[in-house]
Amino acid sequence: MFQVKDLSFKYPKNKENTIEKISFEIKEGEVFGLLGPSGVGKSTTQKILIKLLTNYQGEVLYKGQDLTSYGKEFYQEIGVGFEMPVHFSKLTANENLTFFKKLYKTSANTDELLQQVGLYEDRNKLVNEFSKGMKARLNFVRALINKPKILFLDEPTNGLDPKNARTIKAIIKQFQEEGGTVLLTTHLMNDVDELCDRVAFMANGKIAEIDTPKI
Image 1 (cartoon, rainbow, N blue to C red):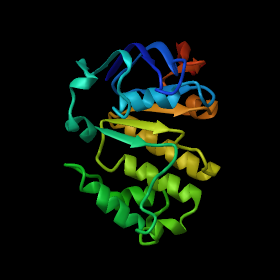
Image 2: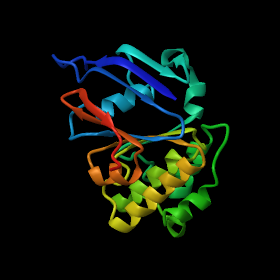
Image 3: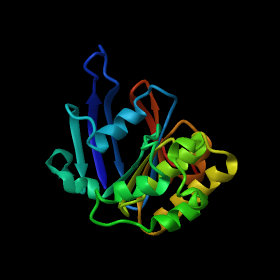
Image 4: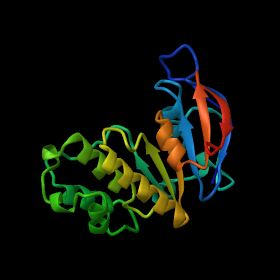
């Protein structure tokens, strides 16, 4: 799905590169993890792959084609769960999802997704009444709203209790079993251990090693 070669990026106000000549590939149908502490470049890498950041050095190919050559059609194929959820707080969960559905050509059954993450009973509640964990789960539903081919998830279990974290992990595995591809960005070894087929260990803006977490 993705081939990344010698990718470097520096934020305008920084003196040094946030990521420095990293190379990896994400195979179709796998869960690929970016693991490392905060500030090593995981989220920056993800933002480049979803076309939020440009002006990078190196090469990024999506399905064998340069990422920069894709237009808006690229966003029809990807789902993104940001670490810090942003919702319309004065709208209900349903109203939020209805709004975002209109941005895509195809959409998933959101009632079914809300039931899976335990938010169906709260679907008509204003989001500003939601707890942090509820907002995180709604954010996850939103990432799946367009039936994406590839999911980008940044700390998807952050702020969730163990029960809801297990639910999210189960849905990720189900997504993979149905042919989906996942890039998982996390600092939690447990999430990597349970979900990832391969993982890139990042440190100081570089990839120290790429391997399987399975023993």
